[in-house]
Structures are given as structure tokens and as C-alpha cells.
Image (cartoon, rainbow, N blue to C red):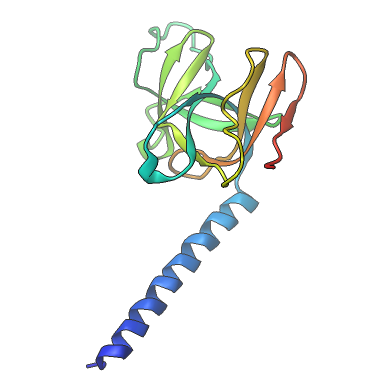
Length: 169
């Protein structure tokens, strides 16, 4: 049995190792997995206990519905891919594993992905989700093999122009 102070050190080393493994996995995913931009619908969660962040609802262009298939409904499952720097959704088939798909709800020309993602805001930076009506807030994400997209950075699109990444000030 390890004496008292030794146990604390062992637990600290174990936690540090787990943190390094998780951080390494996230960095590996960012370097090797596809990425792209997704239009967002910011939602202010108004939970001060969690720190400064904005909750982002992710909106992808509506996937093509094969001829003869019933009209999609809320809770339909989609698989995400990156094409020309933007994220696209494709309806799943019976062969698609559930762990590799996300729930989505049709909303006109776009579909809202579930669940939303949190983007943490550095201290001293104005809330980037508060935009004029002429601007759209986009988020660049990594598309992991499983689970929801992981946000990398925010960008703004003005009219039909390109997406300009936001630089925190």
C-alpha cells in the first residue's frame, strides 16, 4: 500500500496523464479529420456558472432526399462531410451505424443539427454572437469520426462575400 502523500501524487499523475491523452486525441483529430464551416444560430444559454460561452445551433444545407422517399421529419439522422470548405449533410441509410450519424430537424432550406455546441469566449472579448442583421455568424468545425462537430473558430459572412475568421481582441 502506498503511504498518504504518495497516493495523492499518484492520483495527480494519473489525472495529468488522462488530460494529456484527451488533449492529444483532440489535436490528432484536428490534424487528420475533415473540417469545414457551418452557419450558426447563436443561443444565449444565460448560465453564469459555466463561464463565458455562446451556445451555437448548427445549420447545414438540406440534404437531397432520394426520389420516392418520404418527406424527412424531425429527428432524421444525417452523416456530415466537408465539401469545398463547408459542411454538408447526407441522409443515412440502413447500413449507416447510428454512432456515426447525428439527429437533424428540417427547417426550410437548412437543417438544424442536434445537439448544439458551446464556443467558449476569452475574457475581455465582446460576445461575437451579437451581429448586425447584414452579417451571418459561422463556425469552423472538425468533423470527428463519432459525435457532434467540434468548434475551432468563428467567422462572419457579409452578404454573398467570403467567410472572414474573427480574431479575438
